[in-house]
Length: 483
Image 1: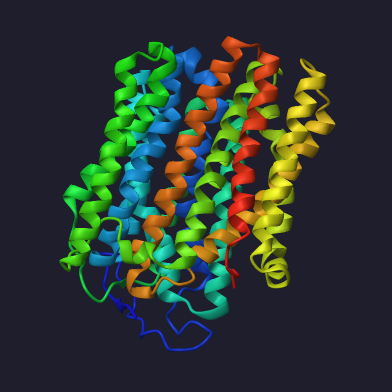
Image 2: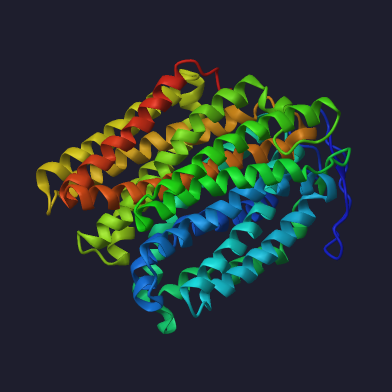
């Protein structure tokens, strides 16, 4: 159970403790409250991808190199992922509504900084800060759902959260394409960041409709674990981002060895700290829940595939098909529309198929990727738009069957007292995998296009991404029932 806490100066009426049952207690998470917290989450997810369709415009305006443009995308994902567990811990200790409000305010301010960026270096720095702000607000969303709902209400809310995660990525590129094409007030690419400001302010004004919760006991902090986790992730990302531009020098590969040592040290430090009664950054006890452990094993390749697909699609659509931002985003409606429709029925499908819903989703997603590869190979440089749309639609249907189900499965066994920690671990894994997927996918596509040909790269990358879907497929065979 959780206890309520106040939020000054946005204090609302005190809410009673949750009762045991299938419905939330009075004063729990209302529909409006859920909309408010999901609004902040949507903004954070949309901003992970909205910039993809603006990269060409950003490059022309700020003269950014390919590596700098990758950092505009992956730098946000890096600080986002690195701060998520810490953000969840802070919410548990000091109040989730308070941290959500502070994080949303910081996200709104840093979005304005991104829109005002005079140089590519300033934009990269602002994106790093924006990702850190997102890391403060996002863990509070799942933690609030976990702490303020029960039974079927919780299942539906988590399902909406999972659907928002994948749908927001695609909608980001659709919205970004529309904003860049409209060129509102001559803002061009800057409007993809400016749009966050009025939405963020509106959500802040309604934040008192969110129930104020926190954990019963304040958790300690884990500076050593945080440092080791950060070093490990930065080393991996540095290799992927800097490799193509530097020509893959031997010294760069030594960073992978540092990452391996960091990961091993992190595991040992976390086990030791928890054994001594401390509060590790990545709790081994939270990760010991079978559904979380197995679900994360599937979530990581699923998210990496998703991030890589959206980033590479943006490069191909605008760089070789000649699409402008609006057309590039509009084609992704072939993903968004089927995803939205199928996600509405995912709980019913999961009730009928159990864990095999993830198996079906991975199969459909892999089929879509292989179809795209075949269409690119046979039809380049003018592949059939109809067949491209069909392939993207299959990818969207598979994502709708897989993503929301994994979210529900991963969090099913996490107790309310560890809601912030559990949601932080989940979203950290998802966002780090998505950021690395986008970076690896972009690097792979650019490298293959240089070694082989653009046509071969455009056909081969979807085949390689289908390997992620195959991995999810194999893992899904041993997943428990998501209900």
